[in-house]
Amino acid sequence: MSEYAREVKSLLSPGPCYIPGYTGHCPGLRFSMGKPYGMLTAELLSQRTWHPESDITHLSENIPDDVFRKSIPGYTVDNFPVIFIQRAKSPVTAALDKVFVYQSLQPFIPPGNPYQMEDDNPKKYFIPGFTGHVPFAHNFYGKGFSITTNQALKEYGKHQRRLKADERDPTHLPTFYSSKKGVIPGFTGHIPGYKFMVGGTVGRLSEVAYGKTFSKITDP
Image 1: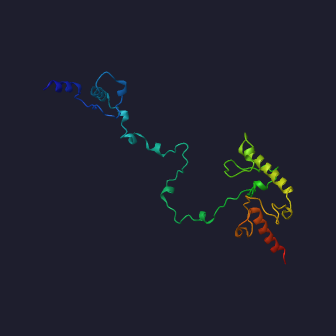
Image 2: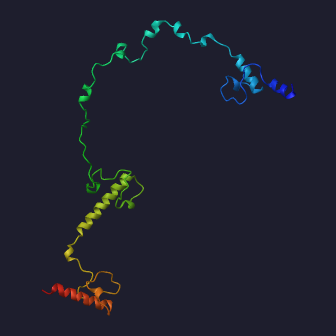
Image 3: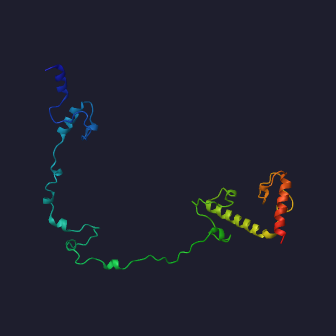
């Protein structure tokens, strides 16, 4: 036998042991040190003794039958095993005949449109998470979303009321240009008949075009 074989044989235990590299559990291994893995596992496995208390194969023979017949405190199932044996003779459909519908004590009333609410309405705001546009909301900051939108909606309502108070009759609004005079160069509006005229200035041609259009409207 070579010297290498004798050295390897001296490291291995003749009894049962785990080979190096075994990743399973070995009781007491982490509390042992100073020896090769094979010797340590062999010693630990040889030290394990059999205790009669750990044998549970005859456990049911040593326990009296009346122990199993007693109810465990807190056990909520009835003590009638017949219930679990018998089956229902007819399908249980009586409970399914009536459909139960949840009815609230107070009917649901939609809060309404925040834009149309009065300023003193406590629900005049948008809930957090609303991603739509809120007029005048950029003028308020440093507060919660509900408070900010409430103040913005109030400001928007005041602005709309001011515009409505300043409204004028559209028929009395002044015109931007005279119907009998030409326009200045750079005018981008529509001039009836202007595109068919050439050989003149913008002011002169537009004046002629307006004159023709005005005469057609006024002549009977």
